[in-house]
Length: 238
Length: 266
Image (cartoon, rainbow over all chains, first blue to last red; front, top):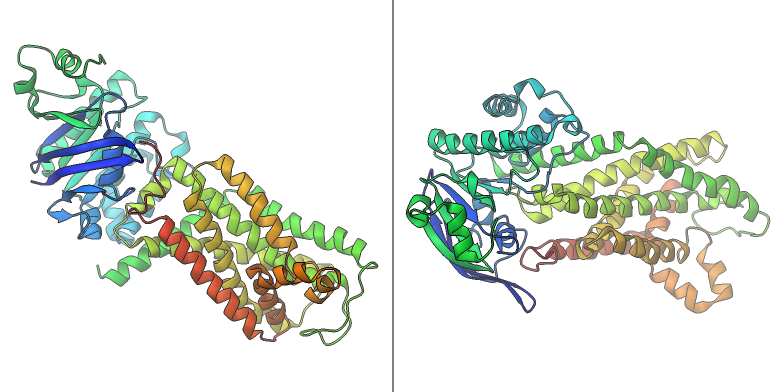
């Protein structure tokens, strides 16, 4: 498994946020982490990105246990956070150079990778623009390009389409699906929007800190739509 | 890429980013310069007549009050900047870029130290800008003192930055931070040797004198004061060095994921 979560539990004081959650995602798969607000998605992301330390259970990224070899695990991890993490006063290229340097990539090697990543996301022409001037979709694309600079084996995206229009949302979702096929990167895409998931994708359904379902989307939903399945399982409509 | 090479590339990027942020915030620079100048040119002028200062090391002769408070005002710049950069850390964390920084595959202590170094370099640049303006107003120091003060300024800057960093790891919202600013900056500044020598303080209260003598900021200011006169104060160096290590230790502890100090309800 490229990404493995085993018996993961976490609580904020007396309030349990995750309870013995286990799932795995194979290399090159697109896995959608579905769940209504408060399901525990953000907590899971905070644990996977080492913002919080694990309290119980374990997380393995590209074969590296996060507790045993955190730096090796982080080197293989790309992250797109829900909130924008671009420095708005810097240009797109400066933002990417900063991130490349955090991963030990500098000079021409960094510039080459930045060109490739921006080109792939259709952002090459905007390399010199300040992040502040970009629209929501372009900011997101910049952040995805940035998350791919160090060629991670696992890519985490925390509700990356929040605040984007339908066309941009569809484009972005398709792009990340293509990326899985072309580069073999493993994707965990947190969302509460079922239309971003296709039948071949893996669905990990989280509700109130527990794992409700884990399987291929088409198999799980059967003849119902994913939206109906989601509502039936969680009692929450989108 | 070797581990050391990676670490140095990342440090350079973090320092450069701090510098670029500073360049984009010109009002911050002006505020940092105006604040000590107001003290120097207005407050000190008024107090000059009220305070008689005797000759104490490192001074060789009678000095004016303006001359006395210059090292304290250098410390003030470092203090305000240390707190301001940690304010930006709280803001960064809310904005998410701190989260991004902490996902870098480098040790937390190194990432935090790099950030600290970046903000210290910017603070020192502002101190020298202040010293230049003071010089233009005829408040001069021994020429070598400007050079000798650099290591003292670096250590004092690191100490105050580390304090800010430690505080920022325990503060979850900007609103709380404003309170801490009032409870940290003002007591630290006024209960120190920045504005009045400690023997003067002892005349009015032994207790206040003891508090001032234990205040790490007093030692940072004395370290700078002695260095500006090409002199050395070992006690101040030890105190400032120890305080830097303790504050840095708290910061690394506070930003340790296992401690969960950064935990905000998910």
